[in-house]
Length: 319
Image (cartoon, rainbow, N blue to C red; front, side, top):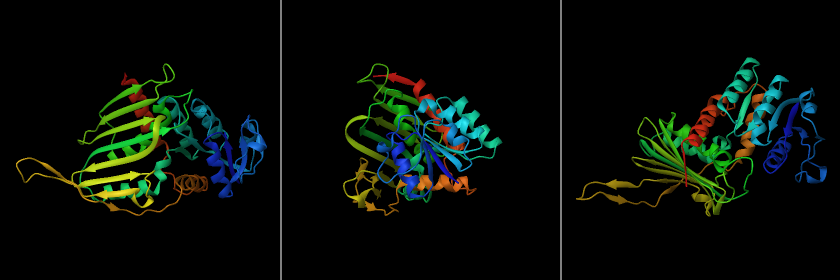
């Protein structure tokens, strides 16, 4: 038994490539895809209707990479057909729909996994390990920047398209849900569809966080900075020097003089496994379909992210 991929568009192509490499891809469901459009190295039957996957005894799980507005209804159909489900972020467009789907997965003892990819990034896992081990002392502020000269969406704004990854990491590091949330939305191209969002969060444990996301940046930046009382950990996924993509800085504020002074250090490069996060994520889903507890982005992790997306949308000031 293997996996059916639903949607082989811009991101689905990457999922197809990894599922093919794992030997798990049995079928692609996409009403608009032709064989000539298959990614290099990918070979699988193309079906036009979801029923082909849901009625097949050779399909154990379904990977959904369709437009976000279709995630909830596709996931529900797959679960009702007895299939394990991986769905790209967000799980649904409303918290109520997400909770309904999660309850259905629990009732049927099926895996429901959400594509919060960076929870499988070896660099983020090493950063989180450093935070937990106290390498930078008590965390005070988390800043996540996800800026791209990327594709401008028409079905969702920059917050819903990009910020789920950042919110997933921030909530995981903070260890709680924020008590205050606000957002600034900047609309540049399409009226009513902001191209940039800056979201601020305040947590009960005196931790603050910001997430800055945009698909109209002239440069690409995927950077997570965690500031602590004894230093900082920085994951820069696009640093020119690969050896400096995860750095530990023991910078500190010197209070011995008449005025506080910032003392800068050179920083220490932290090695981590170079494994592709998407490969690790797909491996985790395949393992979960076989009863292995490798899924760390189930409903318990995903629904708070969706709740935060909803709250940030409601608490928006327009620029």
